[in-house]
Image (cartoon, rainbow, N blue to C red):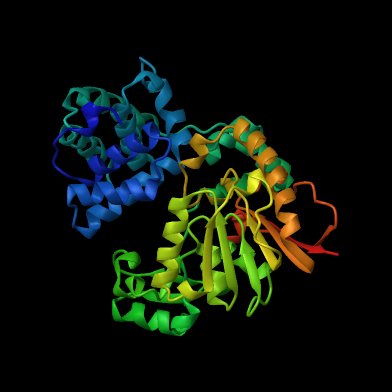
Amino acid sequence: MGERVKNIRWTPGARAVAARVLVTVEQDPAARGPEALASELSVAGVGDPRERALATELVYGVLRQQRRLDHTLAPLVRQGLGRLEPVARALLRVGAYQILFLDRIPPPIAVSATQDAARQVRAGRITGLLNGVLRKVVARGERLPGGGGDGAVGVRASLPDWIVAELRAAYGDDAEAEALALRERAPTTVRPTLTKGGAEACAAKLAEEGFAAAPGPYGTLVVTGPGDPFATEAFAAGHFVPQDPASLAVVDLLGDVAGKRVADLCAGRGLKATALADRGAEVVALDIGAGKLAALRDLAGRLGLADRVTTRVADLAAGPPDIGTFDLVLVDAPCTGLGTLRRHPEIAWRRRPADLASLTVLQERLIANAAPLVAPGGALVWAVCSFARAEGSPPLPSGLTEEVALDLRPSDGLDAFQARRLRLG
């Protein structure tokens, strides 16, 4: 973010917080919505649960519906929406989202409150622009295109055309339904820690702090209640971690792992590695990033699983690591992440077709270099959190044959994952 925006002093409010987060996410390619929002709420000292909830709704709502909002706003901005300063563009989207998607906020309040937010971020110079454009949004409403072309579906589902094309290649006539499912709000799902009493103990601990935990798919719990469940004592004590059911479906694909040596070759921060360790596996977790492995070790320690996880920095793309062979090998490969748009909507505006092309080349190297680590009779599970078919079906190295394929759709209420269990010999 530019220094002018970063260094301002301002009075906190949900709309102002949302605008700052949206500017950060737009300008910083490394910024992730959840972390940016948590940071801004903390800096602003927003304690009112209603304001925190509204800020969250506005950030995620605008990121999900950005193309639809821009389709409405663009004809109303004389100088061009893309030529506006980032804070003006963010506040126009925040205002339009309230008008078009939040029935509980009367349009006149949405317009005036968005102007107040501009003053709070010391951008009072744009209140006239906000007033003029947002009043036109109120009068004109939303006019979505008809037809089944990628562009029309892209506007209605608020996705770039090329992502719609990938959905069409994956799901055929169901593409628009799956696209719209990607724009649904994901529930809060967690993985209870088995070694700390599992789902029953986790639900009981959460209930002590006012939260409800209902059974979800693939051994998860769906958590509802007041505030942030990840600010609870139950979370701090390691009774659960956040995880989408689709991610645990990939772990399930490895089968019974108790007592087995398992290599997680693209382990990241360790959600799947610790899930495997929690099920009794002896896990060797590799990743190219030392920082991610440090986070993995911290997580394993908090969950009481540190003695079951060994970490090692290694670049699987450079060649097979010298760590022996394993009963089971997991490659949760770096991918576009298109299947996680429910939780990370900003990905839609950052990824490009060129990313898909370069990642599939990388993925071919990864599976080729993972294959030598599978012991005779062992299995390799390949997984990507993407619906793009090129990512889910890399060329198979010699000796590996497919046993089971998993294809989880957004319309299942899950992140979109593809996974294949491959047998050696």
